[in-house]
Length: 202
Image (cartoon, rainbow, N blue to C red; front, side):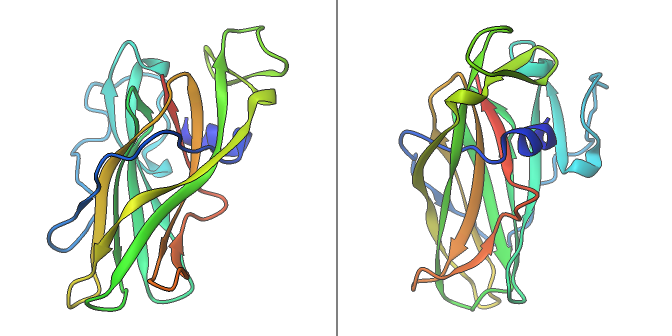
């Protein structure tokens, strides 16, 4: 589903307020959620798309909540990732980490993008089905303001990260371009243009 949102909608973000971000303790790495699809939910995207976990949830679009990990890329030796919940009632729930940054330094994390309204089949100006039973109105695609996802301090080895939740209005598909910047505001890591972070708030 993440890939479909990314390919069709081309990028969709956050609204509302950010709950306090928490700096990660210890060397950051993407969380390990165990078996990808332990209950064998049908119709799920392949694990190769970055799906960490499929959790049954009858009320969620597609009947399951998916936890996704996407890479962050940059121009230096640094590397990073963002793990996020692809379906949520809250908004953007995220866990972001990076390695290879300057040691004992401060970095900020931000996101921006667009939102698009979920509609019933046949409603809206330009309804489009992004997965079975889930329609959006392409005419409602709207940029949303840049959001502050938090700040972290790297350890002596240049590793650090943040996690938190951004509360968002329900009834929209969002897509996030995440970036990590130094204290001068220069981005050092960001979401690749072909792998932005699409998710649903329902």
